[in-house]
Picture: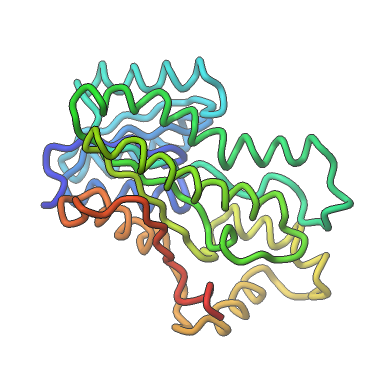
Length: 264
Protein backbone atom coordinates (compact mmCIF):
# COMPACT_ATOMS: atom_id res chain seq x y z
CA UNK A 1 0.00 0.00 0.00
CA UNK A 2 1.32 3.43 -0.98
CA UNK A 3 0.39 5.26 2.22
CA UNK A 4 1.06 2.68 4.93
CA UNK A 5 1.88 4.42 8.21
CA UNK A 6 0.81 7.87 7.04
CA UNK A 7 -1.68 10.14 8.80
CA UNK A 8 -3.94 12.38 6.75
CA UNK A 9 -6.29 15.23 7.63
CA UNK A 10 -9.22 15.71 5.23
CA UNK A 11 -11.56 18.66 5.66
CA UNK A 12 -15.15 18.07 4.61
CA UNK A 13 -14.46 14.35 4.50
CA UNK A 14 -17.86 13.19 5.68
CA UNK A 15 -19.69 13.28 2.35
CA UNK A 16 -19.42 13.91 -1.38
CA UNK A 17 -15.96 14.39 -2.85
CA UNK A 18 -14.37 14.42 0.59
CA UNK A 19 -15.83 11.00 1.36
CA UNK A 20 -14.31 9.60 -1.83
CA UNK A 21 -10.92 11.07 -0.93
CA UNK A 22 -11.07 9.60 2.57
CA UNK A 23 -11.97 6.17 1.23
CA UNK A 24 -9.13 6.11 -1.28
CA UNK A 25 -6.56 7.29 1.29
CA UNK A 26 -7.64 4.60 3.75
CA UNK A 27 -7.60 1.88 1.08
CA UNK A 28 -3.95 2.77 0.45
CA UNK A 29 -3.09 2.39 4.14
CA UNK A 30 -3.47 5.88 5.60
CA UNK A 31 -5.03 6.67 8.96
CA UNK A 32 -7.43 9.59 8.57
CA UNK A 33 -8.73 12.51 10.63
CA UNK A 34 -11.97 13.92 9.20
CA UNK A 35 -12.92 17.50 9.98
CA UNK A 36 -16.50 18.55 9.23
CA UNK A 37 -18.97 21.15 10.49
CA UNK A 38 -21.05 18.36 12.04
CA UNK A 39 -19.29 15.34 13.51
CA UNK A 40 -22.25 13.05 12.80
CA UNK A 41 -21.69 13.47 9.05
CA UNK A 42 -18.29 11.83 9.47
CA UNK A 43 -19.45 8.93 11.66
CA UNK A 44 -20.15 6.50 8.81
CA UNK A 45 -16.89 7.39 7.08
CA UNK A 46 -15.03 6.76 10.34
CA UNK A 47 -16.69 3.33 10.61
CA UNK A 48 -15.68 2.47 7.04
CA UNK A 49 -12.07 3.47 7.66
CA UNK A 50 -11.88 1.38 10.81
CA UNK A 51 -13.42 -1.56 8.93
CA UNK A 52 -10.38 -1.41 6.64
CA UNK A 53 -8.13 -1.80 9.68
CA UNK A 54 -7.07 1.84 9.75
CA UNK A 55 -7.37 4.37 12.57
CA UNK A 56 -9.88 7.19 12.17
CA UNK A 57 -10.97 10.31 14.01
CA UNK A 58 -14.01 12.47 13.28
CA UNK A 59 -14.24 16.06 14.55
CA UNK A 60 -16.69 18.94 14.29
CA UNK A 61 -15.02 22.25 13.44
CA UNK A 62 -15.54 25.35 11.32
CA UNK A 63 -12.34 25.57 9.29
CA UNK A 64 -12.86 29.27 8.59
CA UNK A 65 -12.35 29.98 12.32
CA UNK A 66 -8.83 30.04 13.73
CA UNK A 67 -9.75 28.64 17.13
CA UNK A 68 -11.62 25.69 15.62
CA UNK A 69 -8.76 24.90 13.25
CA UNK A 70 -6.16 25.03 16.04
CA UNK A 71 -8.27 22.74 18.21
CA UNK A 72 -8.86 20.19 15.44
CA UNK A 73 -5.22 20.01 14.37
CA UNK A 74 -4.08 19.63 17.98
CA UNK A 75 -6.63 16.85 18.51
CA UNK A 76 -5.27 15.07 15.44
CA UNK A 77 -1.67 15.27 16.70
CA UNK A 78 -2.72 14.14 20.18
CA UNK A 79 -4.62 11.14 18.77
CA UNK A 80 -2.26 9.95 16.03
CA UNK A 81 1.04 11.41 17.24
CA UNK A 82 1.76 13.11 13.91
CA UNK A 83 0.35 14.32 10.60
CA UNK A 84 1.83 13.68 7.15
CA UNK A 85 -0.88 14.74 4.69
CA UNK A 86 -3.33 17.64 4.53
CA UNK A 87 -6.21 17.61 2.04
CA UNK A 88 -8.18 20.86 1.98
CA UNK A 89 -11.48 19.77 0.50
CA UNK A 90 -14.02 22.09 2.16
CA UNK A 91 -15.59 24.43 -0.37
CA UNK A 92 -18.48 24.95 -2.72
CA UNK A 93 -20.93 27.46 -4.07
CA UNK A 94 -22.30 29.27 -1.04
CA UNK A 95 -24.25 31.96 -2.87
CA UNK A 96 -27.09 31.85 -5.44
CA UNK A 97 -26.00 31.60 -9.06
CA UNK A 98 -26.41 35.20 -10.20
CA UNK A 99 -24.93 37.88 -12.42
CA UNK A 100 -22.12 39.98 -10.95
CA UNK A 101 -24.17 43.15 -10.48
CA UNK A 102 -26.86 41.24 -8.58
CA UNK A 103 -24.43 40.06 -5.89
CA UNK A 104 -23.54 42.07 -2.81
CA UNK A 105 -20.48 42.15 -0.54
CA UNK A 106 -21.64 39.58 2.04
CA UNK A 107 -22.17 36.98 -0.68
CA UNK A 108 -18.59 37.40 -1.86
CA UNK A 109 -17.35 37.21 1.73
CA UNK A 110 -19.16 33.90 2.32
CA UNK A 111 -17.69 32.29 -0.78
CA UNK A 112 -14.18 33.57 -0.02
CA UNK A 113 -14.30 32.19 3.52
CA UNK A 114 -15.57 28.78 2.41
CA UNK A 115 -13.34 28.22 -0.63
CA UNK A 116 -10.09 30.03 0.12
CA UNK A 117 -9.84 31.24 3.70
CA UNK A 118 -10.53 27.73 5.01
CA UNK A 119 -7.51 26.41 3.12
CA UNK A 120 -5.29 29.25 4.29
CA UNK A 121 -6.30 28.64 7.92
CA UNK A 122 -5.64 24.90 7.72
CA UNK A 123 -2.25 25.38 6.10
CA UNK A 124 -1.23 27.93 8.74
CA UNK A 125 -2.03 25.36 11.45
CA UNK A 126 -0.47 22.27 9.84
CA UNK A 127 2.59 23.62 8.01
CA UNK A 128 4.62 24.23 11.23
CA UNK A 129 4.42 20.48 11.94
CA UNK A 130 5.53 19.70 8.40
CA UNK A 131 8.47 22.11 8.67
CA UNK A 132 9.53 20.58 11.98
CA UNK A 133 9.54 17.04 10.53
CA UNK A 134 11.01 18.24 7.21
CA UNK A 135 8.31 16.49 5.21
CA UNK A 136 4.67 16.90 4.25
CA UNK A 137 2.12 16.70 1.47
CA UNK A 138 -0.64 19.24 0.86
CA UNK A 139 -3.42 18.90 -1.72
CA UNK A 140 -5.88 21.75 -2.10
CA UNK A 141 -9.15 21.00 -3.89
CA UNK A 142 -10.05 23.70 -6.42
CA UNK A 143 -12.29 23.28 -9.49
CA UNK A 144 -12.17 23.53 -13.25
CA UNK A 145 -14.49 26.46 -12.55
CA UNK A 146 -11.38 28.30 -11.42
CA UNK A 147 -9.86 27.91 -14.88
CA UNK A 148 -12.84 28.36 -17.18
CA UNK A 149 -14.87 31.53 -16.58
CA UNK A 150 -18.64 31.12 -16.75
CA UNK A 151 -21.45 33.68 -16.38
CA UNK A 152 -23.35 33.89 -13.08
CA UNK A 153 -20.43 32.27 -11.29
CA UNK A 154 -17.95 35.05 -10.47
CA UNK A 155 -17.55 34.50 -6.70
CA UNK A 156 -17.11 30.74 -6.99
CA UNK A 157 -14.78 30.86 -10.00
CA UNK A 158 -12.69 33.71 -8.59
CA UNK A 159 -12.10 32.00 -5.26
CA UNK A 160 -11.33 28.66 -6.90
CA UNK A 161 -8.81 30.43 -9.15
CA UNK A 162 -7.38 31.86 -5.94
CA UNK A 163 -6.90 28.32 -4.61
CA UNK A 164 -4.80 27.46 -7.66
CA UNK A 165 -2.58 30.52 -7.20
CA UNK A 166 -2.33 29.97 -3.43
CA UNK A 167 -1.20 26.37 -4.03
CA UNK A 168 1.52 27.44 -6.45
CA UNK A 169 2.74 30.23 -4.17
CA UNK A 170 2.86 27.86 -1.20
CA UNK A 171 4.68 25.23 -3.26
CA UNK A 172 7.48 27.74 -3.98
CA UNK A 173 7.78 28.87 -0.37
CA UNK A 174 7.72 25.41 1.21
CA UNK A 175 9.89 23.49 -1.25
CA UNK A 176 13.02 24.08 0.82
CA UNK A 177 11.34 22.22 3.70
CA UNK A 178 10.62 19.12 1.56
CA UNK A 179 6.90 19.90 1.44
CA UNK A 180 4.92 19.24 -1.73
CA UNK A 181 1.86 21.40 -2.45
CA UNK A 182 -0.47 20.56 -5.31
CA UNK A 183 -4.02 21.21 -6.40
CA UNK A 184 -6.78 19.03 -7.85
CA UNK A 185 -9.47 20.62 -10.03
CA UNK A 186 -12.56 18.40 -10.28
CA UNK A 187 -15.28 18.84 -12.84
CA UNK A 188 -18.95 18.47 -11.94
CA UNK A 189 -19.72 15.50 -9.68
CA UNK A 190 -23.29 14.59 -8.80
CA UNK A 191 -23.13 14.86 -5.03
CA UNK A 192 -26.19 15.76 -2.89
CA UNK A 193 -24.80 19.28 -2.47
CA UNK A 194 -24.35 19.73 -6.21
CA UNK A 195 -27.81 18.33 -6.93
CA UNK A 196 -29.33 20.88 -4.55
CA UNK A 197 -27.38 23.70 -6.22
CA UNK A 198 -28.67 22.61 -9.65
CA UNK A 199 -32.26 22.47 -8.43
CA UNK A 200 -32.30 25.74 -6.53
CA UNK A 201 -29.96 28.03 -8.45
CA UNK A 202 -28.93 26.74 -11.86
CA UNK A 203 -32.11 25.35 -13.46
CA UNK A 204 -34.27 28.42 -12.61
CA UNK A 205 -31.65 30.78 -14.08
CA UNK A 206 -30.57 29.18 -17.34
CA UNK A 207 -33.86 28.48 -19.09
CA UNK A 208 -34.07 24.77 -18.30
CA UNK A 209 -37.25 24.72 -16.21
CA UNK A 210 -38.88 21.32 -16.07
CA UNK A 211 -35.61 19.39 -16.08
CA UNK A 212 -34.63 17.35 -13.05
CA UNK A 213 -31.23 17.89 -11.49
CA UNK A 214 -30.18 14.48 -12.76
CA UNK A 215 -31.29 15.29 -16.32
CA UNK A 216 -29.41 18.60 -16.26
CA UNK A 217 -26.29 16.89 -14.98
CA UNK A 218 -26.52 14.10 -17.58
CA UNK A 219 -26.70 16.71 -20.33
CA UNK A 220 -23.42 18.14 -19.07
CA UNK A 221 -21.79 14.70 -19.05
CA UNK A 222 -22.85 14.15 -22.67
CA UNK A 223 -20.91 17.28 -23.65
CA UNK A 224 -17.66 16.18 -21.99
CA UNK A 225 -14.97 14.78 -24.33
CA UNK A 226 -14.81 11.45 -22.46
CA UNK A 227 -18.58 11.33 -21.85
CA UNK A 228 -18.08 9.45 -18.60
CA UNK A 229 -19.59 10.52 -15.30
CA UNK A 230 -17.07 11.58 -12.68
CA UNK A 231 -17.10 10.10 -9.18
CA UNK A 232 -15.69 11.23 -5.82
CA UNK A 233 -13.29 8.30 -6.06
CA UNK A 234 -11.84 9.70 -9.30
CA UNK A 235 -10.72 12.71 -7.26
CA UNK A 236 -9.59 10.42 -4.44
CA UNK A 237 -7.29 8.43 -6.71
CA UNK A 238 -5.68 11.66 -7.96
CA UNK A 239 -5.12 12.79 -4.38
CA UNK A 240 -3.54 9.44 -3.47
CA UNK A 241 -1.10 9.80 -6.35
CA UNK A 242 -0.12 13.35 -5.40
CA UNK A 243 0.53 12.51 -1.73
CA UNK A 244 2.43 9.31 -2.49
CA UNK A 245 6.13 8.88 -3.21
CA UNK A 246 5.19 8.36 -6.85
CA UNK A 247 4.75 12.15 -6.99
CA UNK A 248 7.72 13.11 -4.80
CA UNK A 249 9.07 15.46 -7.48
CA UNK A 250 5.72 16.99 -8.38
CA UNK A 251 4.78 20.28 -6.74
CA UNK A 252 2.84 23.37 -7.75
CA UNK A 253 0.63 21.59 -10.29
CA UNK A 254 -3.13 21.87 -10.74
CA UNK A 255 -4.42 18.52 -11.97
CA UNK A 256 -7.77 18.50 -13.79
CA UNK A 257 -10.04 15.54 -13.01
CA UNK A 258 -12.88 16.50 -15.29
CA UNK A 259 -13.25 14.09 -18.20
CA UNK A 260 -11.78 16.78 -20.43
CA UNK A 261 -14.55 19.31 -19.74
CA UNK A 262 -12.10 22.20 -19.27
CA UNK A 263 -11.11 21.75 -22.93
CA UNK A 264 -14.63 21.55 -24.28
